[in-house]
Length: 276
Length: 250
Image (tube, rainbow over all chains, first blue to last red; front, side, top):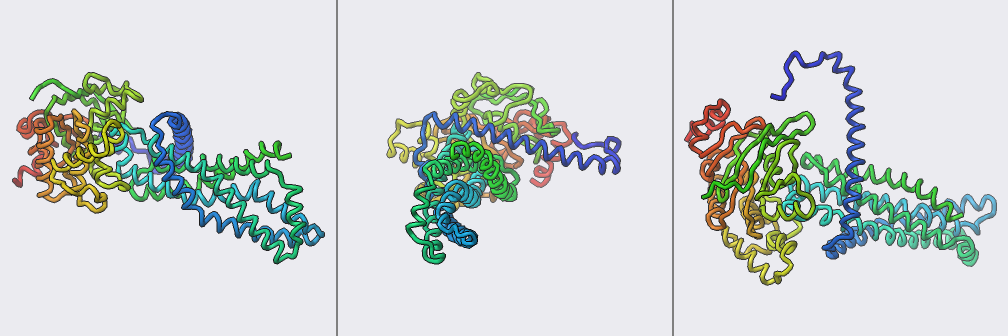
């Protein structure tokens, strides 16, 4: 029998003293387990990416779900980011007569930081949580076990198309974020703040470089890969019915958002060398 | 019926953390027979079944399927071994995003690329008809009753003509008439397709109806094994208590 006898049971005082250490230990073990599982999934995904059968249909379905499905929220976020950022910049720059720099400042900020990070956060909330929920439901209803018993690798069938689609769609969405953000900034700067259109465009042309845009797009591809991997790991390891599925979605949004900010710092540290 | 074992487990132990779930399981599953692993909730039945198909590996001991040690197989070899199995899950585990045709055809489309779409459709219709499911190819799992889902699950499990079919709690959650139907379906699969069946269940009536042999699992150990009559007469307190809940009333 597995149950502890009355003699083996620790006293109430020992239990109270032990509980904080047990809780801490549990958190540490769970964290390392999740990191280990994500690392394993990373290597498995990469190894399956180059082995047939290549699931083009599943990949395109995921591109449609992640890319087209996130279009509205990304465009809306991009437009209002451009609008408000230009508004704040023109107000601040007017204090020392530097309104001509508003366009270039907004575009550089969008390309380098705002577009990749905010697109990443939006996509994590929408597509990341949906992936975790879908795979979590498949896990708790044994559909993933069914795949394995039918001699189909769940990593190859479920994870790889999602990781590839997210990695490809994120730069595209980021590019659209940049475009509508620019339109927003143009509207506020030219029509509301009264900045000369030629000055606005001229300064952008003069200051902004292709590497600003390329660096941001590269960041967004890395964010996409990370979001998909985290969402798949949480979903594939969901347990405990509908509560477990909900938890997987919540953890995906939290871990995905934090990971974007951490990766952003790391990647920016490297890219600053290129940008400067 | 032959006594040659297609699956053999030898002294299989499995723990999850401090929970010692399987404690030295040694069982033979003879070719062409139906073996029911009977036991209460949490006795380790599902864990044992997952060892048979290589979804879990034993901490100690071995599982041999058709002469190969499953715990030593990896990658392509494990895939090839799994192709010998069909598995019917407790709640059918049909893919909700696919209709019945795509669900049942899934293993064929994955592993039999030589078949044309028309041949796949024909094979699916043939297997569905075996279980009285004609003309439901376009329906989705959400549109089917529990019993129909189980039958579609079985059609999917046998579409590749496997040597072994595993059933995970096939009658759980079904009404008595559907339970009878599912029992008949398991017998039919054994008789017509000559498969070896392994059923895990806590349904006493159904188990005694379909089994050639019963293995009673209690607390991670096999405490009674043999023909249904032999298990019914087993001298084990829990077995008698468990079986008595049904036999005393019937």
